[in-house]
Amino acid sequence: MAIKVAIVEDLQEVTDGLAAFLQEDPDIYLAGSFRTAEAAAIELPLLLPDIVIMDINLPGMTGIECVRKVKVLAPATQFMMFTVYENNDQVFEALKAGASGYLLKKTAPLQIIAAVKELYAGGSPMSASIARKLVTVFQQEPAAATEAAKLTTREKEVLELTAKGLLYKEIAHQLGIGFGTVRQHLYKVYEKLHVQNKTEAINKVFGKQY
Image (cartoon, rainbow, N blue to C red; front, top):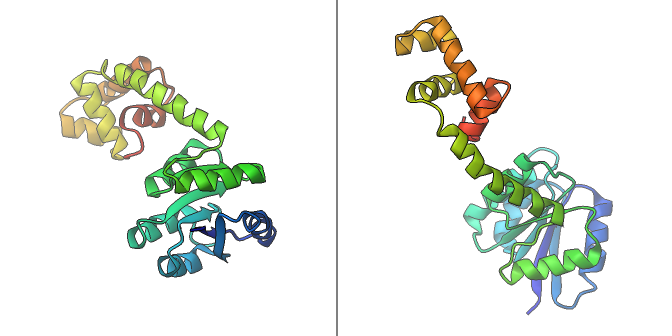
């Protein structure tokens, strides 16, 4: 049975290029294509393709938002992001939304076909540079956790309240300490975590939850 594939891409020339070489493979059946995430979010749960090749930067709803919506209605459908974006936030957001593959648009046609088959077989195909980014991030996490462990309970309290958006004077009032003491705690935090500002410190200790 052929692998049922759909494309969500706003640039017609990209869709045409993908469709042309995908349809040359006898193991792949192109079930449809969509120019917007809004249209895809309605039609994909009805079409139920095996694989969706999904752009991220679409007009209106993003590809990542579309994956998140469709995955609820069609959990068996697998998504492979197909984009020019290589930044960590986009990669992690796509994977958290439910994508199982991540290819860059500069990927060669034969590699895209191989990735579709790999995803269908249960793999998680990714462009080499994306895979390296993921490895680097996971290798850095233990080091960040070790540095965060150096913080005192009070320093963590101050940083968490800062992360919640409280001003120094509000933190001082809530913890019953002086305004200057709050600043001293934060300077100590920066020093221990080897960061330059509160945003870097918050991300290092709490990740993206704030």
